Length: 156
Image 1 (tube, helix red, strand yellow):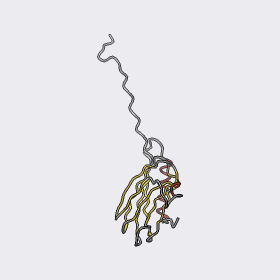
Image 2 (cartoon, rainbow, N blue to C red; image 1 turned 90 degrees about the vertical axis):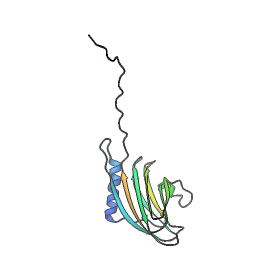
Image 3 (cartoon, helix red, strand yellow; image 1 turned 60 degrees about the vertical axis):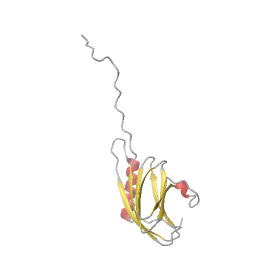
Image 4 (cartoon, rainbow, N blue to C red; image 1 turned 180 degrees about the vertical axis):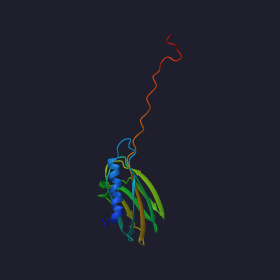
């Protein structure tokens, strides 16, 4: 890997809280949400990755990207990172011209990466990211089915 985005202490703590909140969300408790903001410089012809450790299955991760110029943004599982930059099967891939927002539901628990790919770029890119982690949504319980029965009958 050519580089990893370094988080400030505040952003790293916020991100750990978000991941912990996802992991510890209890059914029916409403869960917790947290976010982390960070900045990175991605040199021309390079890429950087941000690691998100221990995401639980079905957690929701929202990413907002603001960049000084075009850059490719990829969200993928750690198993796919082993093949990068060769062909990968990311959970998300998109190009941010100036701004890009996306939300991914984590398909398999584990460590994920947000890759900022500027390998085709001719200039350095200043990138700002806002990452929000939300716990898995619990399905609402279905109301009990009404039992069919006699209607309008008098029991006298």
